[in-house]
Image (cartoon, rainbow, N blue to C red):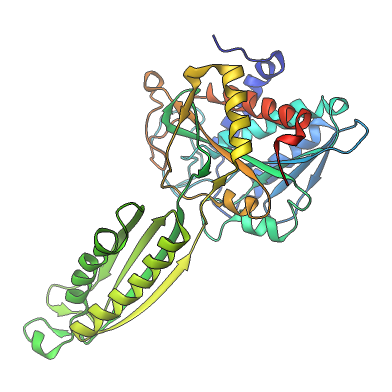
Length: 398
C-alpha cells in the first residue's frame, strides 16, 4: 500500500481543480498569457513566495528557507503550454479553445508544481537555501522556452535541476528512471527542390522536382540503415511532402519536411552531413537544385548519476519496488536539457496509464486523458526529493 504524507493527501483535490482549470483553458507555446497569470495569482495566494516574470509568459516562484546557514538552491521545472489539437474527449472540463488542447500532461505538471509551492510555503522554517520553481512556457515549440529562461537568468545560482513528465507509456504511479543519456536530441530539416515545370505530356522539356523528391525521400532512409553504425540509435522521418496542384502540370518546385532523433553528438553530426550530401547528390543526378535548411533543436537530457541514485532510493523508500522501472533511452525531445548544461539534473518519467479509466491513449492524441491520481504520486516524489537533497547536500558533487 502506498504511503502518502498527510500534507500531500490534503492537496490532491486542489491540484485536480487547478489541473482542470488549466485543461479547460489551454494556450499554445509563447501565448500562455492567461496561464502564467493564473500561476502567478495562485503563488501569491500561498504567501511567502517571491514571484518573478523573467519572460513574457514564464513564471518563477522562489521559496526561500528561513533556517540559518548556507543551503543549496534546488530548481524544479514544470512546463505549461498546450498543443494545436482539437480535443475529442467528452469531459465537463474539456478544452474551451478551438484546436488547442493539453494533450501532453503539461496541465498536470503545472498543478503538481503549484501543489509543491503551496506545501513548501508552509515549511520554510524547516530548511535553509531555496527551492526555485520554474513554470516554463513553450516546451512544445522550438527554440523553446527553456533556453529563453536560461538567457534571462531565471536559473542563475541554481545548484541542480529536477524535472518530471507524465507518461501513458508506464502504469499509474510507476517511475521510469535512467542515469546518463535519457532523451534524444531533436533536429529538423526542410528541403526544397527547384526544377523546371511544364506540360505533363512533354516531360523531356522539364526538370521534374517531384520525381526527384520521390527519389530523395527513399535515399534519406539510407542514412540510418547504411551510414549510422548499428550500435548507435537514430531516426530520420520524412513527415510532410508537397508538390504541385494539378493533374497535368509538372511543378517547378517540391518540398519536404523531416525530423531527426539521435543520442550522441557524433551521430547527430553524421546525420546532418548526410542530409546535405544526399540532397545535393540526388538533385545533381536529377537535374534540379536543392536548398537545405537544417535546424538543430533540443539537445539530449543527460541524468546525473548521483541524482539518479538518490531518486531510486527515494522512490523505493516511499513507494516500493513495484513502482520503480529502469528504462532505456526515449525518442521524444525535451528542452529541460538546457537547464542542465551548467549544473547536474535529473528527469523522471511518471506513469499515468490506467486503461480502466480510459487513460491509456498516447500523448499528442485528441483522445488523451490523464488519470489525475498521478498528481499525488508526482507531488509526493518531488517533496521527498527536495527534503532529501536539503538534508543530504553532499549527494551532489559540484
